[in-house]
Length: 150
Image 1 (cartoon, rainbow, N blue to C red):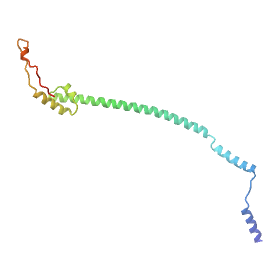
Image 2: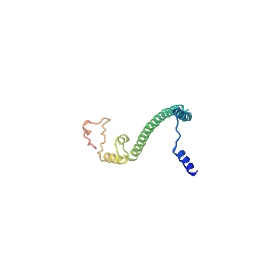
Image 3: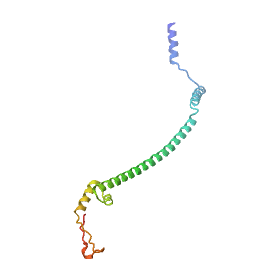
Image 4: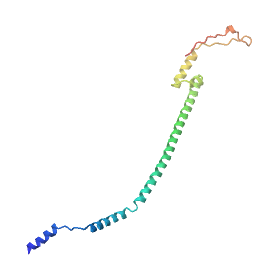
């Protein structure tokens, strides 16, 4: 008997179950049905995700526009503040050094150094006193040559 049992077990191990085409179609159909049921709302979710992405992109572009506008205004504000600070500095230094603020403002570079230069140039210039002769200056007494300072 032990031989029969071994043969039966051996036959069962080597024999595989075979399916007919209709049985395979039924098994595959059942699996596909479960898979379709699992992802039945995929199209709806995909549309919602696409709409969300589009809304986010539109919002992002609006945000980006606002950020760019803010940056442009900030740059303009910084420029105006720098101009105002320079104007205030020029006025203060011109008053301290006793030089013309309009002339000093036209110079580039260090304001204090420019003011010192202007002061030195103006101090080295000869001074001409107007000649008063009864309210009118004589043409011959007025010097027409003034040395250049630059």
